[in-house]
Length: 180
Image (cartoon, rainbow, N blue to C red; front, side, top):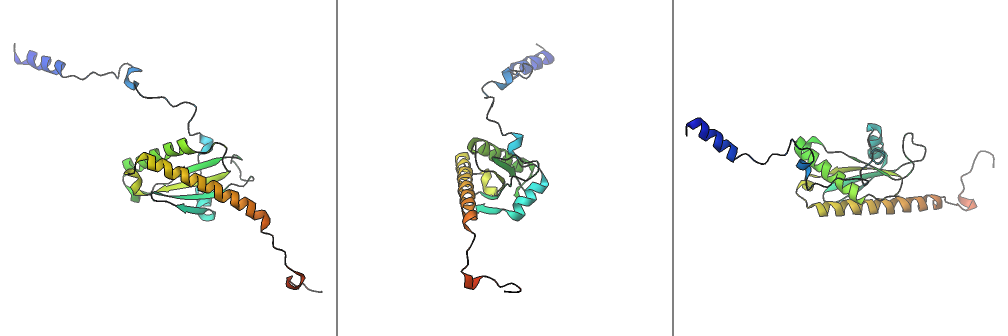
């Protein structure tokens, strides 16, 4: 056998089982997600919405993320009236594009799995910390779940407290106006 024949025999022997030409075989064993997606209506997309949450909202700190949230008013234009809208911000200081995208994918999946269906009408921005890359996914799920529970409690308490915050002063403490 000459050298060219031996080289072609060797290359044929070590070729991996390539299935890229067969469309459905390359995705064997991978589940397709249907029905439980992260819909566009559940995402925070506009820069103005992110800024509003940062400036007017409240914060919740945890080990691997900071969560900003703000109750959405029914008069907001373009906003659906119920449910959480969630956005993510991952700054360049947290790493390269690969690491930042991995953080966003992990958080997006955690939100998809733990997002309360009816939920309060609020906008949420999640800022991860670098620790989230090394954290176990179950720990990330737990933190996101705890953040959503905390947001629901705080917003429910805020709604109940807003109606009871009208203070009644006794007559001696009422502010005096012009001709009294």
